[in-house]
Image (cartoon, rainbow, N blue to C red; front, side, top):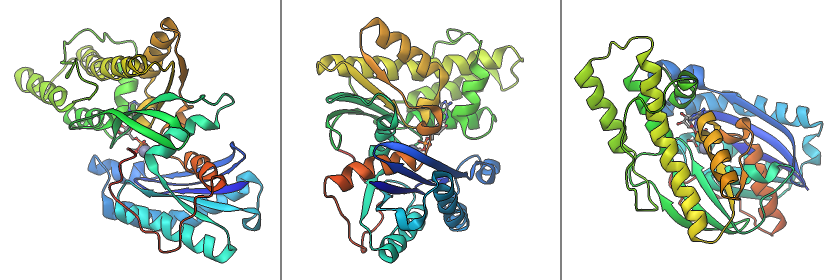
Length: 331
Ligand code: KG4
Ligand code: ZN
């Protein structure tokens, strides 16, 4: 089956073609440069940019995949969670295409899409597996009982891990998106230089707001004029505190449920230290690790088409009155 995926839940306008679990194209128009001066995504601007980008991005996805619109057999679109004004742009485009082409439409949960990025690899995780979805808006661990059936094992009680990266970068005037900058600055620095807190040690849930406060306290105490050597050590230590709990809790959740497969996905899964630590920890414990390539960790439409194809093949269909939802728990 040839499926066109469309994603517009936040600040990337994306379209992709997937066929029989293989990615044929993955077009992304990023708005990072537009939102950067504001230090975060401005929803109203995001919606306007999605309108400008949506048709060219769809055209590019078709061109790159060497398929025509007439060859598309189904449309998968992110229905939520996300910014409602942004979601509506992708959803409207998807509905228009499904209507005009007389092909089925399916609305996809963005978080389920992130997990499905792992299904585009040569080696697909077998069932059951545990999945850490770690992005700018979410930090949750799921048990996948099937490719479209999840149980929530743990989640953040306050900020998402990506938010913890972004807020720290903002406090330190490092730019946006914070995770990317902090990842880069931390390379080669000392991750043990500052003892940042690791919250909720004995719970499957996460909490990152105390970590952010602890950075703020440090900045107040010492002032913001760090030497060129000090700053990398501070951000590397901050990053390490986030990575530590993500790795520990995910591995523990897998162990507790007798599962020896872990999927790590979402924007923060692009983090090089997180990838390194998961690789080391899972190999030491004989757990199979599945982390999509960086381009499929951050927001994209190939992941939406990937789960969309599975859902369409299972008979899932949505009607043309499908609405976007800003909040939509996966389980
Ligand atoms: O999945 P995503 O693209 O959008 C959401 O669904 O939220 O995730 C965006 C988040 C941002 O918070 C960004 O700072 C973080 O992913 N991120 C990273 C890295 N690349 C993106 N965090 C840490 N290290 C990275 N290399
Ligand atoms: Zn995302």
